[in-house]
Image (cartoon, rainbow, N blue to C red):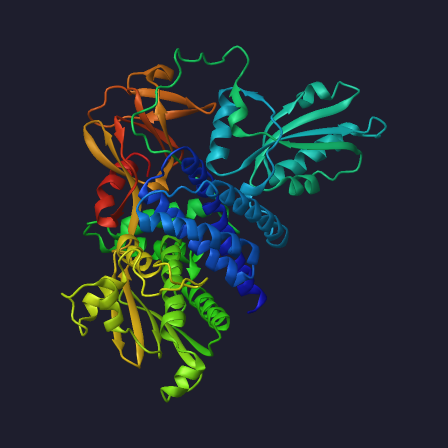
Amino acid sequence: MDAAKNRELKLFFRDDAHRIQDFLRSFAQAWAKADPSANETARCFRDVHSLKSEAAFLGYTDIADRAEKIEKILAAARNAGKKPRDEELPGLLEDLCRCLLQTLAILNAELGEPDDCRPEPEAVEFSSDDFEMAMLQEAQYRGERFYRIDVEIDSCEPMPFPRLYLLVNNLELCASLIRITPPLDILKQDKDFLVSLYATTSRGSDSLEEALDVDGVISLEITEIPFGHIGPASGEEEEEAPGGEQPAESLPDYTREERKSVFLYQDELALYAFIAACLSAWPAKDSRGRLLAKALSIILRRQSGLSLALIMEKAGEMANEVASRLGKLLEVEVRVSGDVMVLPIVRDAVNGILTHLVRNAVDHGIETPDKRNDAGKLEWGRVILEAEIKKGTYTIRVADDGEGIRASEILEAAGNPDVKSGDTAGILKILTRPGFSTRKQVSSVSGRGVGLDVVRDLVIGRLGGKLTLDTKPGKGATFTVSFSDKTVKYPAFPARVGGRLLLMPRVMVERIFPLNAEKLAGSNRSFFYSLDGVSCRVRLFSGQKEPRSGAGILVRAGAAPFIIAASAVEEERMFRLAELVPSVSVLLARDF
Protein backbone atom coordinates (compact mmCIF):
# COMPACT_ATOMS: atom_id res chain seq x y z
CA MET A 1 0.00 0.00 0.00
CA ASP A 2 1.49 3.38 -1.03
CA ALA A 3 2.00 6.25 1.39
CA ALA A 4 -1.00 8.27 0.17
CA LYS A 5 -3.43 5.39 0.65
CA ASN A 6 -1.94 4.47 4.00
CA ARG A 7 -2.40 8.05 5.16
CA GLU A 8 -6.06 8.05 4.06
CA LEU A 9 -6.72 4.83 5.97
CA LYS A 10 -5.11 6.22 9.10
CA LEU A 11 -7.22 9.38 8.77
CA PHE A 12 -10.29 7.14 8.54
CA PHE A 13 -9.25 5.32 11.69
CA ARG A 14 -8.50 8.55 13.55
CA ASP A 15 -11.93 10.00 12.72
CA ASP A 16 -13.68 6.79 13.77
CA ALA A 17 -11.66 6.57 16.99
CA HIS A 18 -12.56 10.15 17.92
CA ARG A 19 -16.23 9.44 17.24
CA ILE A 20 -16.29 6.13 19.12
CA GLN A 21 -14.29 6.90 22.25
CA ASP A 22 -16.71 9.54 23.59
CA PHE A 23 -19.58 7.08 23.33
CA LEU A 24 -17.51 4.32 24.93
CA ARG A 25 -16.90 6.48 28.00
CA SER A 26 -20.57 7.38 28.37
CA PHE A 27 -21.54 3.73 27.89
CA ALA A 28 -19.04 2.68 30.59
CA GLN A 29 -20.73 5.08 33.02
CA ALA A 30 -24.19 3.82 32.07
CA TRP A 31 -23.04 0.20 32.55
CA ALA A 32 -21.59 0.95 35.98
CA LYS A 33 -24.69 2.80 37.25
CA ALA A 34 -27.59 0.94 35.65
CA ASP A 35 -28.55 -1.30 32.76
CA PRO A 36 -27.94 0.48 29.43
CA SER A 37 -30.64 0.16 26.80
CA ALA A 38 -30.56 -2.62 24.23
CA ASN A 39 -29.90 -0.06 21.50
CA GLU A 40 -26.93 1.37 23.41
CA THR A 41 -25.51 -2.10 23.98
CA ALA A 42 -25.95 -2.97 20.30
CA ARG A 43 -24.29 0.28 19.23
CA CYS A 44 -21.36 -0.24 21.59
CA PHE A 45 -20.98 -3.81 20.34
CA ARG A 46 -20.88 -2.70 16.71
CA ASP A 47 -18.54 0.22 17.38
CA VAL A 48 -16.09 -2.01 19.24
CA HIS A 49 -16.38 -4.65 16.52
CA SER A 50 -15.60 -2.08 13.79
CA LEU A 51 -12.79 -0.58 15.86
CA LYS A 52 -11.24 -4.02 16.31
CA SER A 53 -11.35 -4.69 12.57
CA GLU A 54 -9.81 -1.35 11.59
CA ALA A 55 -7.13 -1.60 14.28
CA ALA A 56 -6.19 -5.13 13.23
CA PHE A 57 -5.99 -4.01 9.61
CA LEU A 58 -3.61 -1.16 10.47
CA GLY A 59 -1.54 -3.33 12.81
CA TYR A 60 -2.64 -1.73 16.10
CA THR A 61 -2.69 -5.03 17.98
CA ASP A 62 -3.02 -3.49 21.45
CA ILE A 63 -6.32 -1.87 20.46
CA ALA A 64 -7.54 -4.97 18.62
CA ASP A 65 -6.81 -7.25 21.60
CA ARG A 66 -8.57 -4.95 24.06
CA ALA A 67 -11.56 -4.63 21.74
CA GLU A 68 -11.72 -8.44 21.50
CA LYS A 69 -12.11 -8.78 25.28
CA ILE A 70 -14.86 -6.15 25.39
CA GLU A 71 -16.60 -7.77 22.46
CA LYS A 72 -16.92 -11.07 24.35
CA ILE A 73 -18.73 -9.38 27.24
CA LEU A 74 -21.03 -7.41 24.94
CA ALA A 75 -21.76 -10.50 22.87
CA ALA A 76 -22.93 -12.28 26.02
CA ALA A 77 -25.07 -9.26 26.94
CA ARG A 78 -26.68 -9.11 23.52
CA ASN A 79 -27.36 -12.84 23.36
CA ALA A 80 -28.82 -12.85 26.88
CA GLY A 81 -30.95 -9.78 26.16
CA LYS A 82 -29.77 -8.14 29.40
CA LYS A 83 -26.62 -7.04 31.17
CA PRO A 84 -24.74 -9.97 32.76
CA ARG A 85 -23.02 -9.50 36.09
CA ASP A 86 -19.69 -8.30 34.78
CA GLU A 87 -18.17 -5.39 36.68
CA GLU A 88 -14.98 -5.58 34.63
CA LEU A 89 -16.40 -3.89 31.53
CA PRO A 90 -16.17 -0.20 32.59
CA GLY A 91 -12.48 -0.66 33.44
CA LEU A 92 -11.85 -2.42 30.13
CA LEU A 93 -13.57 0.38 28.23
CA GLU A 94 -11.51 3.02 30.03
CA ASP A 95 -8.36 1.03 29.29
CA LEU A 96 -9.33 0.86 25.61
CA CYS A 97 -9.92 4.62 25.55
CA ARG A 98 -6.51 5.24 27.13
CA CYS A 99 -4.90 3.01 24.52
CA LEU A 100 -6.80 4.91 21.82
CA LEU A 101 -5.52 8.23 23.16
CA GLN A 102 -1.93 6.98 23.04
CA THR A 103 -2.35 5.76 19.47
CA LEU A 104 -4.12 8.97 18.45
CA ALA A 105 -1.26 11.01 19.89
CA ILE A 106 1.14 9.08 17.65
CA LEU A 107 -1.19 9.52 14.67
CA ASN A 108 -1.56 13.24 15.35
CA ALA A 109 2.23 13.62 15.37
CA GLU A 110 2.40 11.70 12.10
CA LEU A 111 -0.62 13.15 10.29
CA GLY A 112 -0.88 16.59 11.84
CA GLU A 113 -2.94 17.45 14.89
CA PRO A 114 -6.70 17.95 14.23
CA ASP A 115 -8.61 20.88 15.69
CA ASP A 116 -10.34 18.86 18.39
CA CYS A 117 -7.02 17.52 19.73
CA ARG A 118 -5.57 20.92 20.62
CA PRO A 119 -4.81 21.42 24.29
CA GLU A 120 -7.40 23.38 26.23
CA PRO A 121 -6.51 27.08 25.84
CA GLU A 122 -5.82 29.25 28.85
CA ALA A 123 -8.96 30.81 30.32
CA VAL A 124 -8.79 34.47 29.22
CA GLU A 125 -11.77 36.77 29.52
CA PHE A 126 -12.69 39.38 26.90
CA SER A 127 -15.38 42.05 27.29
CA SER A 128 -16.74 43.46 24.03
CA ASP A 129 -19.00 46.23 22.82
CA ASP A 130 -21.88 45.62 20.39
CA PHE A 131 -19.76 46.18 17.26
CA GLU A 132 -17.00 43.87 18.45
CA MET A 133 -19.56 41.27 19.50
CA ALA A 134 -21.03 41.33 15.97
CA MET A 135 -17.56 40.83 14.47
CA LEU A 136 -16.85 37.95 16.84
CA GLN A 137 -20.19 36.29 16.06
CA GLU A 138 -19.38 36.37 12.35
CA ALA A 139 -15.89 34.98 13.04
CA GLN A 140 -17.30 32.18 15.16
CA TYR A 141 -19.78 31.31 12.42
CA ARG A 142 -16.93 31.20 9.89
CA GLY A 143 -15.14 28.69 12.13
CA GLU A 144 -12.27 31.00 13.06
CA ARG A 145 -10.36 31.12 16.35
CA PHE A 146 -9.95 34.14 18.62
CA TYR A 147 -6.51 35.15 19.93
CA ARG A 148 -4.95 37.71 22.24
CA ILE A 149 -1.44 38.67 21.12
CA ASP A 150 0.77 40.45 23.66
CA VAL A 151 3.69 42.21 21.96
CA GLU A 152 6.50 44.33 23.31
CA ILE A 153 8.71 46.49 21.08
CA ASP A 154 12.26 47.22 22.18
CA SER A 155 12.31 50.74 23.69
CA CYS A 156 15.80 51.20 22.22
CA GLU A 157 14.40 50.73 18.72
CA PRO A 158 15.11 53.97 16.75
CA MET A 159 11.60 54.03 15.26
CA PRO A 160 9.41 51.93 17.61
CA PHE A 161 6.03 53.25 16.50
CA PRO A 162 6.55 52.59 12.75
CA ARG A 163 7.85 49.15 13.74
CA LEU A 164 4.64 48.50 15.68
CA TYR A 165 2.56 49.85 12.79
CA LEU A 166 4.32 47.37 10.48
CA LEU A 167 3.54 44.57 12.91
CA VAL A 168 -0.17 45.51 12.96
CA ASN A 169 -0.20 45.71 9.16
CA ASN A 170 1.30 42.19 8.91
CA LEU A 171 -1.32 40.89 11.31
CA GLU A 172 -4.17 42.33 9.23
CA LEU A 173 -2.89 40.41 6.20
CA CYS A 174 -3.70 37.08 7.85
CA ALA A 175 -6.33 37.92 10.49
CA SER A 176 -9.28 40.18 11.31
CA LEU A 177 -8.18 42.71 13.90
CA ILE A 178 -10.82 43.23 16.61
CA ARG A 179 -9.06 45.58 19.05
CA ILE A 180 -5.73 47.17 19.92
CA THR A 181 -5.11 47.88 23.60
CA PRO A 182 -4.09 50.57 24.26
CA PRO A 183 -5.17 52.36 21.04
CA LEU A 184 -2.34 53.36 18.71
CA ASP A 185 -2.95 57.12 19.11
CA ILE A 186 -2.40 56.77 22.88
CA LEU A 187 0.47 54.34 22.45
CA LYS A 188 2.22 56.82 20.16
CA GLN A 189 2.59 59.21 23.10
CA ASP A 190 3.88 56.48 25.45
CA LYS A 191 7.47 55.46 26.04
CA ASP A 192 6.69 51.77 26.68
CA PHE A 193 5.54 49.96 23.54
CA LEU A 194 3.66 47.08 25.14
CA VAL A 195 0.40 46.33 23.33
CA SER A 196 -2.31 43.65 23.29
CA LEU A 197 -3.85 42.79 19.94
CA TYR A 198 -7.12 40.88 19.67
CA ALA A 199 -7.78 39.13 16.35
CA THR A 200 -9.67 36.25 14.76
CA THR A 201 -8.28 33.96 12.09
CA SER A 202 -8.75 30.52 10.59
CA ARG A 203 -4.99 29.96 10.85
CA GLY A 204 -3.11 28.57 13.81
CA SER A 205 -0.87 30.38 16.27
CA ASP A 206 2.23 29.30 14.35
CA SER A 207 1.08 31.29 11.31
CA LEU A 208 0.45 34.33 13.49
CA GLU A 209 3.87 34.02 15.06
CA GLU A 210 5.47 33.87 11.61
CA ALA A 211 3.54 36.94 10.44
CA LEU A 212 4.61 38.87 13.54
CA ASP A 213 8.29 38.02 13.19
CA VAL A 214 9.38 41.67 12.98
CA ASP A 215 12.72 43.16 13.97
CA GLY A 216 12.56 44.99 17.27
CA VAL A 217 10.04 42.63 18.91
CA ILE A 218 11.53 41.51 22.23
CA SER A 219 8.52 39.48 23.50
CA LEU A 220 5.55 37.84 21.85
CA GLU A 221 2.87 35.77 23.55
CA ILE A 222 -0.17 34.35 21.74
CA THR A 223 -3.14 33.07 23.76
CA GLU A 224 -6.35 31.60 22.37
CA ILE A 225 -9.58 32.90 23.92
CA PRO A 226 -12.56 30.49 23.82
CA PHE A 227 -15.67 32.17 22.40
CA GLY A 228 -17.50 31.09 25.54
CA HIS A 229 -15.29 33.49 27.54
CA ILE A 230 -16.56 36.55 25.65
CA GLY A 231 -19.08 38.78 27.39
CA PRO A 232 -20.61 42.27 27.17
CA ALA A 233 -18.55 45.30 28.13
CA SER A 234 -18.22 46.23 31.79
CA GLY A 235 -21.46 47.61 33.21
CA GLU A 236 -23.58 45.65 30.72
CA GLU A 237 -23.42 42.19 32.26
CA GLU A 238 -26.52 40.12 31.83
CA GLU A 239 -28.40 39.15 34.94
CA GLU A 240 -28.74 35.47 35.59
CA ALA A 241 -32.37 34.40 35.27
CA PRO A 242 -33.78 33.32 38.63
CA GLY A 243 -33.87 29.60 39.05
CA GLY A 244 -31.60 28.99 36.02
CA GLU A 245 -32.61 27.24 32.81
CA GLN A 246 -35.44 24.75 32.98
CA PRO A 247 -34.55 21.65 30.97
CA ALA A 248 -37.12 20.65 28.34
CA GLU A 249 -38.60 17.21 28.93
CA SER A 250 -36.96 14.41 26.91
CA LEU A 251 -34.73 16.91 25.10
CA PRO A 252 -32.20 15.26 22.75
CA ASP A 253 -28.63 15.82 23.88
CA TYR A 254 -26.97 17.19 20.77
CA THR A 255 -24.06 19.55 20.11
CA ARG A 256 -22.40 19.31 16.73
CA GLU A 257 -18.66 18.56 16.59
CA GLU A 258 -16.87 20.51 13.89
CA ARG A 259 -14.07 18.93 11.91
CA LYS A 260 -11.78 20.74 9.51
CA SER A 261 -10.78 19.67 6.01
CA VAL A 262 -7.76 20.90 4.05
CA PHE A 263 -9.44 23.95 2.50
CA LEU A 264 -12.85 24.49 4.08
CA TYR A 265 -14.64 23.22 7.13
CA GLN A 266 -16.16 19.83 6.41
CA ASP A 267 -19.33 20.85 8.22
CA GLU A 268 -19.66 23.89 5.96
CA LEU A 269 -19.20 21.76 2.87
CA ALA A 270 -21.67 19.19 4.18
CA LEU A 271 -24.25 21.94 4.76
CA TYR A 272 -23.83 23.40 1.27
CA ALA A 273 -23.90 19.96 -0.31
CA PHE A 274 -27.09 19.12 1.60
CA ILE A 275 -28.77 22.35 0.47
CA ALA A 276 -27.67 21.69 -3.12
CA ALA A 277 -29.15 18.19 -2.89
CA CYS A 278 -32.40 19.69 -1.61
CA LEU A 279 -32.45 22.16 -4.50
CA SER A 280 -31.96 19.29 -6.93
CA ALA A 281 -34.99 17.55 -5.39
CA TRP A 282 -37.09 20.74 -5.29
CA PRO A 283 -40.49 20.35 -7.02
CA ALA A 284 -39.86 23.28 -9.37
CA LYS A 285 -40.60 23.80 -13.06
CA ASP A 286 -37.52 25.94 -13.67
CA SER A 287 -35.21 23.51 -15.48
CA ARG A 288 -32.34 26.02 -15.49
CA GLY A 289 -32.49 26.28 -11.72
CA ARG A 290 -32.44 22.51 -11.42
CA LEU A 291 -29.39 22.32 -13.72
CA LEU A 292 -27.61 24.98 -11.66
CA ALA A 293 -28.35 23.08 -8.45
CA LYS A 294 -27.08 19.88 -10.01
CA ALA A 295 -23.84 21.57 -11.08
CA LEU A 296 -23.42 23.02 -7.59
CA SER A 297 -23.99 19.59 -6.08
CA ILE A 298 -21.28 18.08 -8.30
CA ILE A 299 -18.78 20.80 -7.34
CA LEU A 300 -19.46 20.36 -3.63
CA ARG A 301 -19.30 16.60 -3.95
CA ARG A 302 -15.79 16.93 -5.34
CA GLN A 303 -14.74 19.33 -2.58
CA SER A 304 -16.18 17.49 0.41
CA GLY A 305 -16.46 13.94 -0.89
CA LEU A 306 -14.09 11.02 -1.17
CA SER A 307 -13.20 8.96 -4.19
CA LEU A 308 -15.26 5.77 -4.32
CA ALA A 309 -12.23 4.11 -5.91
CA LEU A 310 -10.17 4.79 -2.78
CA ILE A 311 -12.86 3.24 -0.57
CA MET A 312 -12.95 0.16 -2.79
CA GLU A 313 -9.14 -0.11 -2.75
CA LYS A 314 -9.18 0.09 1.04
CA ALA A 315 -11.67 -2.78 1.09
CA GLY A 316 -9.36 -4.73 -1.22
CA GLU A 317 -6.45 -4.23 1.15
CA MET A 318 -8.64 -5.45 4.00
CA ALA A 319 -9.54 -8.59 2.05
CA ASN A 320 -5.85 -9.47 1.58
CA GLU A 321 -5.13 -8.82 5.27
CA VAL A 322 -8.01 -11.06 6.43
CA ALA A 323 -6.94 -13.80 4.01
CA SER A 324 -3.38 -13.67 5.34
CA ARG A 325 -4.59 -14.03 8.93
CA LEU A 326 -6.74 -17.03 7.98
CA GLY A 327 -4.01 -18.76 5.96
CA LYS A 328 -5.86 -18.38 2.66
CA LEU A 329 -4.48 -17.42 -0.75
CA LEU A 330 -6.38 -14.60 -2.40
CA GLU A 331 -6.44 -12.42 -5.50
CA VAL A 332 -8.48 -9.23 -5.28
CA GLU A 333 -9.73 -7.32 -8.30
CA VAL A 334 -11.17 -3.82 -7.89
CA ARG A 335 -13.33 -2.39 -10.67
CA VAL A 336 -14.62 1.18 -10.45
CA SER A 337 -16.35 2.89 -13.33
CA GLY A 338 -15.13 6.49 -13.61
CA ASP A 339 -13.93 8.94 -10.99
CA VAL A 340 -16.95 8.81 -8.68
CA MET A 341 -16.97 11.02 -5.57
CA VAL A 342 -19.36 10.33 -2.71
CA LEU A 343 -20.44 12.63 0.09
CA PRO A 344 -19.51 11.87 3.73
CA ILE A 345 -22.94 10.48 4.63
CA VAL A 346 -22.67 7.99 1.74
CA ARG A 347 -18.96 7.36 2.29
CA ASP A 348 -19.45 6.28 5.91
CA ALA A 349 -22.27 3.90 5.01
CA VAL A 350 -20.42 2.36 2.04
CA ASN A 351 -17.28 1.93 4.13
CA GLY A 352 -19.23 0.01 6.77
CA ILE A 353 -21.00 -2.10 4.16
CA LEU A 354 -17.77 -3.09 2.43
CA THR A 355 -16.02 -3.86 5.73
CA HIS A 356 -18.55 -6.56 6.62
CA LEU A 357 -19.22 -7.93 3.12
CA VAL A 358 -15.50 -8.31 2.39
CA ARG A 359 -14.79 -9.97 5.73
CA ASN A 360 -17.67 -12.41 5.21
CA ALA A 361 -16.54 -13.18 1.65
CA VAL A 362 -13.02 -14.09 2.74
CA ASP A 363 -13.90 -15.84 5.99
CA HIS A 364 -17.11 -17.66 5.04
CA GLY A 365 -16.76 -17.87 1.26
CA ILE A 366 -13.16 -18.45 0.21
CA GLU A 367 -11.87 -21.93 1.10
CA THR A 368 -8.42 -22.88 2.34
CA PRO A 369 -5.93 -23.98 -0.36
CA ASP A 370 -6.38 -27.66 0.57
CA LYS A 371 -10.16 -27.50 0.30
CA ARG A 372 -9.94 -25.68 -3.02
CA ASN A 373 -7.59 -28.37 -4.35
CA ASP A 374 -10.02 -31.07 -3.23
CA ALA A 375 -12.83 -29.23 -5.03
CA GLY A 376 -10.80 -29.02 -8.23
CA LYS A 377 -10.23 -25.26 -7.92
CA LEU A 378 -7.10 -23.17 -8.07
CA GLU A 379 -5.44 -22.66 -4.70
CA TRP A 380 -5.85 -18.91 -5.02
CA GLY A 381 -9.35 -17.68 -4.29
CA ARG A 382 -10.74 -14.61 -5.98
CA VAL A 383 -12.75 -11.66 -4.71
CA ILE A 384 -14.10 -9.00 -7.07
CA LEU A 385 -15.09 -5.56 -5.75
CA GLU A 386 -17.06 -3.56 -8.29
CA ALA A 387 -18.69 -0.12 -8.22
CA GLU A 388 -20.45 1.90 -10.89
CA ILE A 389 -23.01 4.67 -11.28
CA LYS A 390 -25.53 4.78 -14.11
CA LYS A 391 -28.34 7.31 -14.45
CA GLY A 392 -27.96 8.37 -10.84
CA THR A 393 -28.00 4.83 -9.42
CA TYR A 394 -25.00 3.47 -7.55
CA THR A 395 -24.31 -0.25 -7.76
CA ILE A 396 -21.72 -1.96 -5.55
CA ARG A 397 -20.94 -5.66 -5.79
CA VAL A 398 -18.82 -7.95 -3.66
CA ALA A 399 -18.32 -11.33 -5.35
CA ASP A 400 -16.21 -14.36 -4.45
CA ASP A 401 -15.54 -17.71 -6.11
CA GLY A 402 -15.76 -19.65 -2.86
CA GLU A 403 -18.09 -22.43 -1.79
CA GLY A 404 -21.21 -20.26 -1.89
CA ILE A 405 -23.95 -19.99 0.71
CA ARG A 406 -24.70 -23.37 2.24
CA ALA A 407 -28.48 -23.10 2.44
CA SER A 408 -28.90 -26.32 4.44
CA GLU A 409 -26.63 -25.04 7.22
CA ILE A 410 -28.42 -21.70 7.26
CA LEU A 411 -31.85 -23.28 7.53
CA GLU A 412 -30.70 -25.72 10.21
CA ALA A 413 -29.16 -22.95 12.31
CA ALA A 414 -32.25 -20.78 11.89
CA GLY A 415 -34.75 -23.55 12.54
CA ASN A 416 -36.99 -22.05 9.85
CA PRO A 417 -38.84 -24.68 7.79
CA ASP A 418 -40.84 -22.04 5.85
CA VAL A 419 -37.84 -21.02 3.71
CA LYS A 420 -36.71 -23.34 0.94
CA SER A 421 -33.07 -23.86 0.03
CA GLY A 422 -33.52 -22.23 -3.39
CA ASP A 423 -35.15 -19.11 -1.99
CA THR A 424 -32.17 -16.70 -1.97
CA ALA A 425 -34.33 -13.79 -0.80
CA GLY A 426 -35.52 -15.85 2.16
CA ILE A 427 -31.97 -17.02 2.89
CA LEU A 428 -30.82 -13.39 2.83
CA LYS A 429 -33.50 -12.42 5.37
CA ILE A 430 -32.17 -15.09 7.73
CA LEU A 431 -28.54 -14.05 7.19
CA THR A 432 -29.38 -10.44 8.04
CA ARG A 433 -31.06 -11.24 11.35
CA PRO A 434 -29.28 -9.57 14.29
CA GLY A 435 -26.97 -12.04 16.00
CA PHE A 436 -27.38 -14.83 13.43
CA SER A 437 -24.27 -16.94 12.82
CA THR A 438 -23.56 -20.52 11.78
CA ARG A 439 -20.15 -20.42 13.46
CA LYS A 440 -19.77 -22.42 16.66
CA GLN A 441 -16.24 -21.09 17.21
CA VAL A 442 -15.55 -17.36 17.57
CA SER A 443 -12.49 -15.88 15.90
CA SER A 444 -11.07 -12.38 15.68
CA VAL A 445 -12.62 -12.17 12.20
CA SER A 446 -16.17 -13.44 12.63
CA GLY A 447 -18.52 -15.74 14.45
CA ARG A 448 -20.37 -13.29 16.70
CA GLY A 449 -23.28 -12.73 14.35
CA VAL A 450 -22.22 -9.21 13.47
CA GLY A 451 -21.98 -8.29 9.81
CA LEU A 452 -24.91 -8.79 7.49
CA ASP A 453 -27.40 -7.30 9.94
CA VAL A 454 -25.23 -4.17 9.98
CA VAL A 455 -25.08 -4.24 6.18
CA ARG A 456 -28.87 -4.45 5.99
CA ASP A 457 -29.28 -1.54 8.41
CA LEU A 458 -26.83 0.60 6.43
CA VAL A 459 -28.27 -0.26 3.03
CA ILE A 460 -31.92 0.19 3.98
CA GLY A 461 -31.77 2.51 6.98
CA ARG A 462 -29.06 4.91 5.74
CA LEU A 463 -28.96 4.64 1.95
CA GLY A 464 -32.60 3.72 1.36
CA GLY A 465 -31.37 1.10 -1.09
CA LYS A 466 -31.65 -2.60 -1.84
CA LEU A 467 -29.50 -5.59 -0.90
CA THR A 468 -29.65 -8.74 -3.02
CA LEU A 469 -27.86 -12.09 -3.02
CA ASP A 470 -26.90 -14.42 -5.85
CA THR A 471 -25.21 -17.70 -4.92
CA LYS A 472 -24.48 -21.11 -6.38
CA PRO A 473 -23.12 -24.07 -4.39
CA GLY A 474 -19.42 -24.45 -5.02
CA LYS A 475 -19.29 -21.41 -7.30
CA GLY A 476 -19.38 -18.51 -4.85
CA ALA A 477 -21.70 -15.69 -3.85
CA THR A 478 -22.36 -12.12 -4.95
CA PHE A 479 -23.89 -9.43 -2.75
CA THR A 480 -25.22 -6.40 -4.63
CA VAL A 481 -26.06 -3.04 -3.09
CA SER A 482 -27.96 -0.43 -5.10
CA PHE A 483 -29.13 3.07 -4.16
CA SER A 484 -29.37 6.61 -5.53
CA ASP A 485 -28.87 10.13 -4.21
CA LYS A 486 -32.66 10.48 -3.95
CA THR A 487 -33.00 7.43 -1.70
CA VAL A 488 -30.20 8.39 0.72
CA LYS A 489 -31.56 9.25 4.14
CA TYR A 490 -30.41 12.15 6.30
CA PRO A 491 -30.66 12.44 10.09
CA ALA A 492 -33.10 15.07 11.35
CA PHE A 493 -34.79 16.10 14.59
CA PRO A 494 -38.62 16.38 14.40
CA ALA A 495 -39.56 19.60 16.24
CA ARG A 496 -42.92 21.15 17.13
CA VAL A 497 -42.66 24.87 16.30
CA GLY A 498 -45.60 27.27 16.42
CA GLY A 499 -48.16 24.53 15.91
CA ARG A 500 -46.35 22.95 12.97
CA LEU A 501 -43.95 20.02 12.69
CA LEU A 502 -40.54 20.91 11.28
CA LEU A 503 -37.90 18.33 10.41
CA MET A 504 -34.59 19.91 11.45
CA PRO A 505 -31.76 18.33 9.40
CA ARG A 506 -28.85 17.55 11.68
CA VAL A 507 -26.42 19.19 9.25
CA MET A 508 -28.23 22.51 9.90
CA VAL A 509 -28.38 22.11 13.68
CA GLU A 510 -25.55 23.48 15.80
CA ARG A 511 -27.02 22.64 19.18
CA ILE A 512 -30.21 21.68 21.07
CA PHE A 513 -30.56 23.11 24.56
CA PRO A 514 -33.16 23.97 27.24
CA LEU A 515 -34.47 27.48 26.49
CA ASN A 516 -35.48 29.73 29.39
CA ALA A 517 -37.81 32.55 28.27
CA GLU A 518 -36.64 34.73 31.15
CA LYS A 519 -33.25 35.09 29.46
CA LEU A 520 -34.79 36.56 26.29
CA ALA A 521 -34.35 40.21 25.35
CA GLY A 522 -36.39 42.28 22.87
CA SER A 523 -39.99 42.83 21.83
CA ASN A 524 -42.29 43.21 18.79
CA ARG A 525 -41.20 39.89 17.28
CA SER A 526 -37.53 40.89 17.52
CA PHE A 527 -35.89 38.78 20.22
CA PHE A 528 -32.36 37.76 21.16
CA TYR A 529 -31.09 35.01 23.45
CA SER A 530 -27.69 34.80 25.12
CA LEU A 531 -26.05 31.44 24.55
CA ASP A 532 -22.54 30.88 25.90
CA GLY A 533 -21.98 34.61 26.06
CA VAL A 534 -23.05 35.21 22.45
CA SER A 535 -26.30 37.01 21.65
CA CYS A 536 -28.23 35.13 18.95
CA ARG A 537 -31.35 36.19 17.07
CA VAL A 538 -34.50 34.18 17.79
CA ARG A 539 -36.56 33.57 14.68
CA LEU A 540 -40.34 33.35 15.01
CA PHE A 541 -42.64 31.46 12.69
CA SER A 542 -46.33 31.86 11.95
CA GLY A 543 -48.32 31.01 15.05
CA GLN A 544 -45.61 32.32 17.38
CA LYS A 545 -46.11 35.75 18.96
CA GLU A 546 -43.14 35.45 21.27
CA PRO A 547 -40.72 32.70 22.32
CA ARG A 548 -41.63 30.52 25.28
CA SER A 549 -39.60 28.27 27.52
CA GLY A 550 -39.01 24.83 26.07
CA ALA A 551 -36.39 23.67 23.63
CA GLY A 552 -33.95 25.94 21.83
CA ILE A 553 -32.46 24.89 18.50
CA LEU A 554 -29.39 26.78 17.27
CA VAL A 555 -29.61 26.65 13.47
CA ARG A 556 -27.19 27.72 10.77
CA ALA A 557 -28.86 28.19 7.42
CA GLY A 558 -27.79 31.59 6.14
CA ALA A 559 -25.71 34.65 6.93
CA ALA A 560 -25.59 33.96 10.68
CA PRO A 561 -26.89 31.35 13.11
CA PHE A 562 -30.30 31.85 14.66
CA ILE A 563 -32.35 30.16 17.36
CA ILE A 564 -35.72 28.48 16.98
CA ALA A 565 -37.93 28.18 20.05
CA ALA A 566 -39.69 24.81 19.92
CA SER A 567 -42.27 23.39 22.28
CA ALA A 568 -40.83 19.89 21.81
CA VAL A 569 -37.97 18.16 19.99
CA GLU A 570 -37.93 14.42 19.32
CA GLU A 571 -34.96 12.09 19.05
CA GLU A 572 -33.09 11.97 15.77
CA ARG A 573 -34.57 9.88 12.94
CA MET A 574 -33.67 9.26 9.29
CA PHE A 575 -35.61 10.92 6.45
CA ARG A 576 -35.35 11.08 2.68
CA LEU A 577 -34.74 14.37 0.87
CA ALA A 578 -38.33 14.52 -0.38
CA GLU A 579 -39.51 14.46 3.24
CA LEU A 580 -37.04 17.15 4.33
CA VAL A 581 -37.48 19.63 1.47
CA PRO A 582 -40.69 21.28 2.83
CA SER A 583 -39.03 22.00 6.19
CA VAL A 584 -35.80 23.16 4.55
CA SER A 585 -37.75 25.60 2.37
CA VAL A 586 -39.23 27.13 5.55
CA LEU A 587 -35.82 27.39 7.23
CA LEU A 588 -34.23 29.03 4.17
CA ALA A 589 -37.17 31.32 3.35
CA ARG A 590 -35.74 34.42 5.04
CA ASP A 591 -32.06 33.64 4.84
CA PHE A 592 -31.31 33.03 1.17
